[in-house]
Length: 125
Image (cartoon, rainbow, N blue to C red; front, side, top):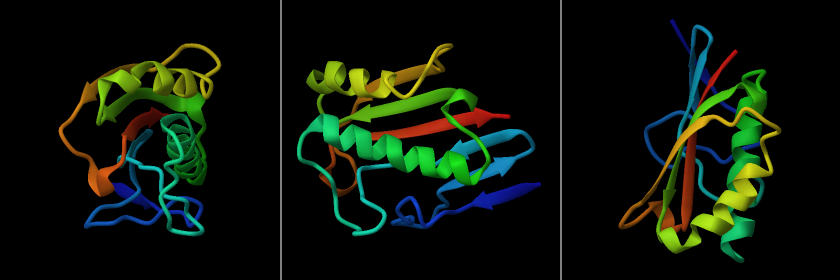
């Protein structure tokens, strides 16, 4: 049995997918980019600001599912440029208190809307 998770506190899907799907105790989020949920505009002042918006969007999706970053067991980070790794990593790390989730970070040729970073998560409660 699956439950679709949707919140107005994160940007709506820009394609045929859900913000997240919960099945049993597992939550699978779709990748989030730095779209501000209220304005619908991209937040791309710099890669750190962009990453903060991505994490805020993920926090909203997790919250809608009754979870926090403490529930996250796996993340996937997609970067347009691996040279942004340290800046993104610094922001990303600030959202976790301890017991960091498993993760991979990869550089890709292009991301939706030509953003610099996209992150998806798997969480467990």
